[in-house]
Image 1 (tube, rainbow, N blue to C red):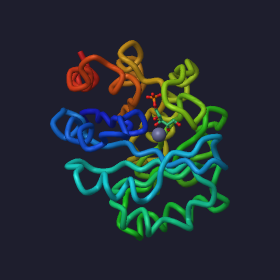
Image 2: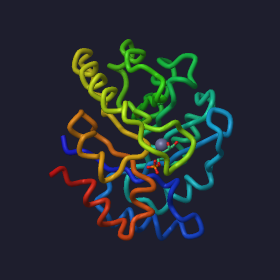
Image 3: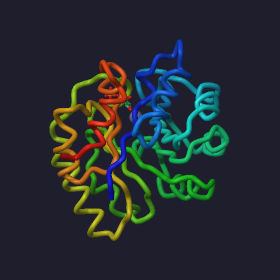
Image 4: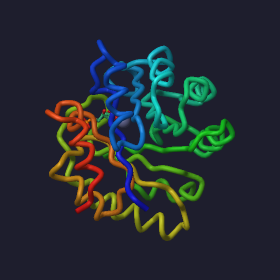
Length: 217
Ligand code: DX5
Ligand code: ZN
C-alpha cells in the first residue's frame, strides 16, 4: 500500500486553527492526527471535545485521534460523536486492552493501540489480529518537537515481522520526531503512517513538506 501522512494538529496555530485545517485539506496529507492529553498519563494537557468538534466541522480528511489519557474506555462514544474515525488508546493505559479494542470497533471506528518507547512489541502478540493500527511512539509522549529515538527502527522491523506471523492487517504508525532525514528509513523498515507535527508546521512551506513526506523516492 502507499503510505499515509498524518500532520499533527498539536503543532498547528490555535489562534487561527481554521487556516491550518484548510492548509491540510488542500495538501496531499491523508489524515489529521489529533493528540489528546490529560495531564495524568502524560505530563501535559492538550485539548478536548470542543476543539475536536471544531476540527470535525472543517476537516475534509479522517481524524486519527491519539488518546494519551488514563482509562480511555470512559470516553469512546464521545470521541466517535466528536468525529474520530481512528481511535488509538495506549497499551500502558488500559487494564483490559482487548475489551477497549472491541469497544472502539463496536462504535464504528478503527482501533489503534499506541506503545511507549519502553514497551516491547511482543506484548501486542495476543491481540494483534484484532488491531487496525499500531502507533509506535518514537518519543516519550506528551510534547511535540522532541528528538526521534533511534531504537524505533529496530522496533518497527520487529513489529512488521510480528504482524506477518500473526496474520494481522494492522498499519504501523510512527509518532514523534519524524522528519525529512528519517522518514524514508522508517518506510523501509515497514512503517505505513507517518505522523509529523513540528516538521510540517514549523517548515517554510508546509504543503511542500507534506508532498516530500508522501514521496518515497
Ligand atoms: C507526542 C504526540 C505527537 C506529536 C508529534 O506526544 O503524540 O503526535 O504531536 O509531534 P512531532 O512530530 O513534532 O514530534
Ligand atoms: Zn500523537
